[in-house]
Length: 374
Image (tube, rainbow, N blue to C red):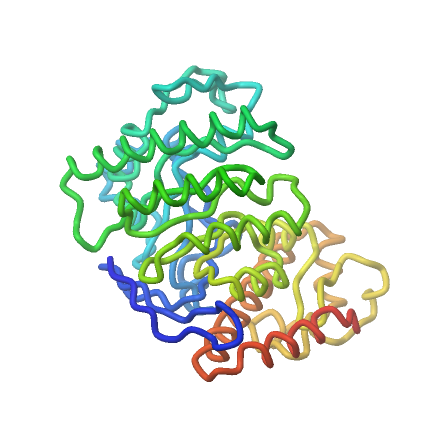
């Protein structure tokens, strides 16, 4: 994998670059839709490709439990299994283990946890996490980390950071011992909760290990937004210019724009697809709850500034009807629209950086988005 930085905005830290992988180039800033179980819910790979997806995220924890990484390896790897020819990033499973706090035991060696499917006991070490992701043939592999929620007291945050660093070292050794294509990459993950000194310490140590890219983890776990961006800025300040930066789990449009202004390149979040399946879509004038009764006779598209398939062919009234009737087409069209909105936003943002217009573009975008006009 190679990262080429093309332009940095003069008035902020916003960057435009290209991540070159063996399965195609990824233009940054980039939003990665989440395909937890080897599928972005309700959409086909062809639809994702046509709307502009460059890379998708899949989940190591879920695919390890079902159908199993060895089965996926036997069937030709995750790309063939899910019929997705472009790049795939797999997370390490650390966040899922964090979310199963009642079913896990963290040790120096790794994590013991119980499956949410059948209660069976499993153990994942940093080495096993890398081996699973290599079996999946991920283009971007994440190290195992220990994520803690907010608030986390200082001793707990320090221990989680120390475990994360130890696991990162072991992940790197495991990665280097395997036969990994040069076009594949291993990213380290920064932890440290909302403690600046821990964040800086963790980031500096990971940079010394020389990963292919760096993720900012342990945020969007309940802390105030101000703390999210303060810790993001602290982390970016310690990261090298020539490696991609990935803020994990942040997905609201205004938050992505703020993080891009700080110098972040990559994002993922289930929120646009999850909200869409529940009848809330993103538009150029903010969020719209299409299930609401006010749209029962509304002949307008979801977003009059959007040319996606859902907006070209269907009214708000029809989308509301589909949700009220429990028809599967409703969540499909809503998901298609919201992801189209996100991909278009990222393309416009990238173009504004390349043209030296990021501040002007972001101001105009946010004014329209936050206007709430329907």
